[in-house]
Length: 154
Image 1 (cartoon, rainbow, N blue to C red):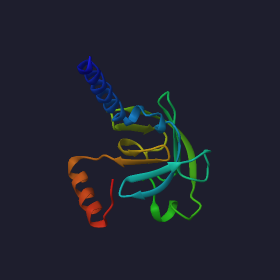
Image 2 (image 1 turned 180 degrees about the horizontal axis):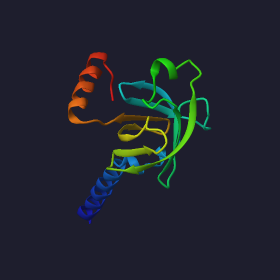
Image 3 (image 1 turned 90 degrees about the vertical axis):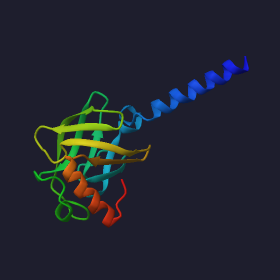
């Protein structure tokens, strides 16, 4: 009897641990997020109660849709011009997101390519989200060396 209870407990915790690793299915992702910082393609967001049109951010929906307050710039966020402090020229765009793996999502905005790409969810809590954009292996190697010299964690 004791052996079967311990096996059931072990199985319960193992299944719970495996499920907790799936960040793309986490209900915390399906919120409104305000861009807090941007460091070498590591986007740090904080939870936002309403979707403010004057602040860069994202809103994930369960049906694979995403709404983004994004810069008009085709090159993505321009830290010197768009963030922070200055009133940036943001527009609201609708796009799609999909699960690639347990910790990776793909985002696609058809009319603005500033946030298009594949992102690793490196941190997801009730109040915070950290996305790291993925590139080819050689570009990732260069970005990692820049992040290490600037002491940027992801």
